[in-house]
Image (tube, rainbow, N blue to C red):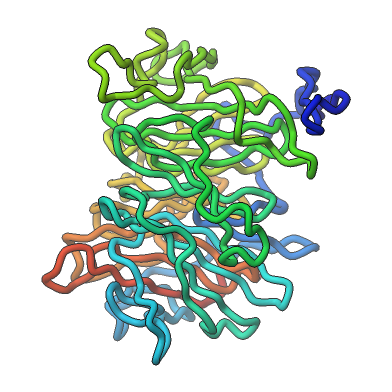
Length: 422
């Protein structure tokens, strides 16, 4: 638990340093035989869970069948539909057209039983974020932008207070906080830049609500694993993203072991200056990760992927220890390659989308087994991006970033419906 001090002079609550470790780590973490159940946040591919807790059916799914009419191989009992295509209107008569190169995503529950699905656009100069609004029957009833004119928006992450953090994947990339409802809920948070989260080649972000910290990945061959700790809480009790401490991780083993954190002294270097030092080089002892990709927090563990070596990492926050959940070089069943976006199901499955590979979404079960959930056929030059469950857990969303047409970045966004959970 966090110790909250008295109000500071700006009326915000300061976060004390007194924190207790969790009473117990996940059983068998050292051997990665994790047992993980319960609720999870929604986002960068995520979902909410029912009050009683869902029961996973993912480990019971059969083999993938022949491609359906949309070119998707699915287990028996599942169906797919196309939701949106780049440069095409999502709704008849609408002037809003779906963006190019759809990438990282999240879903957000609405009070009327529907939800919003947000999706980044990984395009230089005009990236931004688009949104699809669903009613309670899963019909698309609106589509609109929630961020415009940003640069190569790759992935990001949701916050527990219902906003989306959209990350730029360029050398001086920024993070923007956006309202998925287009300003309806958070008119003050429509594309607000959050410089305290650093200027670097961002990929994704995830928030640990128990310890009150944010973790970020960096998509370069020698990128860092970052941690942001706010100086204060807001008046609403949320993490203040305007001021805090940015650190990088050093793993004391090779490749796994205890983790120490080192200060990033200048989170916002001006790389146009010859003497500017990129954030990843400001702590000489920081561990270099080979292309950080998707990241997700679940029950005290931060999972993230590195595409350069096809690894899925698991960082235990309380133990401050890094382990490997999956490595294709040592796996007995190395069917997962091109690891990219990741989401953890509320029942503990770590679900990874492939950039390349054989265009699959693969679940790593709590028992360590690998279960393909789907495969896109005939789009070998593309990549799968943005897996996300609907809040009712009946639907899985994802995109093929470059699709099948002979134009660059004309993506296709899909929905798969079926018994992922019982």
